[in-house]
Image 1 (cartoon, one colour):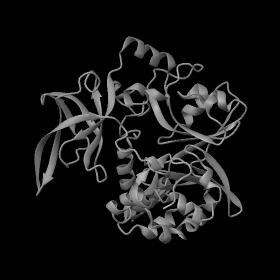
Image 2 (cartoon, rainbow, N blue to C red):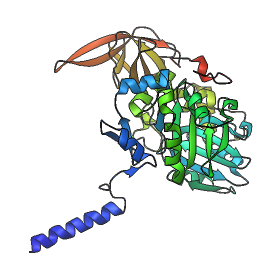
Image 3 (cartoon, helix red, strand yellow):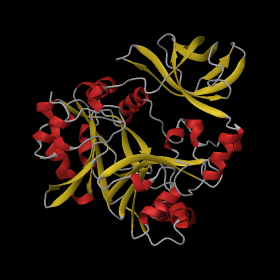
Length: 414
């Protein structure tokens, strides 16, 4: 009897822990989960910021080609979203991030990053200017405590709206046609990195010409309660435009072709790094072009300027082509087949380029002044045996794939 009572007590404790967000609690469901669950014949899910998200829905290859050939719909609701507003919102964000926010016009978006006081990257993301004193900051990781601490002395309001705002990425050469057929008039006027607020079901949806695929594409944000009606509005014209819902695997393939980086995949954010040698400055992960040393002081400015002046930057992120067709994520890179000089952070076979491409982090001067005689060590699984392959590496510019339609104005119709 005591054993039974003990088990019941344990179960009730577990239930209580689960209800309070314990490690045993189930993943949260996206506002679009009901639609995605109906389409996910693979039952292939992963955890994204505590939310259940699809890795693949049906066929990864078909989902990838939807991005490049027709249109693809991807749920970005789990992305962290902060609403920052108030009289000092611009000044606060200019102090926080490395780009000059004063140059960001209303109804515009820019890509940026922000650093700690030592110049190490905390995260990268997109900053949407919704009004003169109103912004939305989107990122991979959660940063509310950092944002609140950094806002000391500024007259701003910072609200985590990650759960309240649903988001969809609509990407591919037919993406504009989908929006047009769904009745979103005026979208044809949007230029790259521009946004507009359009009516939907008694509310509004914010549509920006942005994305993570290097293709023509849009991102749509609206209140959670309107999420399913937006999905259904787009899905009503899906068959006509051969639009397909996709999971992260296909998106990740496309972002590698576009040369885009992912926090805690291609670099480790400074808040999560456990070792000093894992920290990275913007210049060490290919984000040097974002840094504006001419604007007023920002977090990490002096450290970045000092590292540049003294040439103490230790790492470099590069694009590479690897001979053969075997992808080698997290494979080691060697110079002269002997000296370990870096690691592959992301890799893929590009069906369009017909090349084996990858993003790699190298220790300087390799990848900077020493660019020849580089090799990658790949272990290929073939019939239950791993075969060691040493493949030659060629450093190439990013993005690997450039598509004119991404910046076409007005967007093309297909």
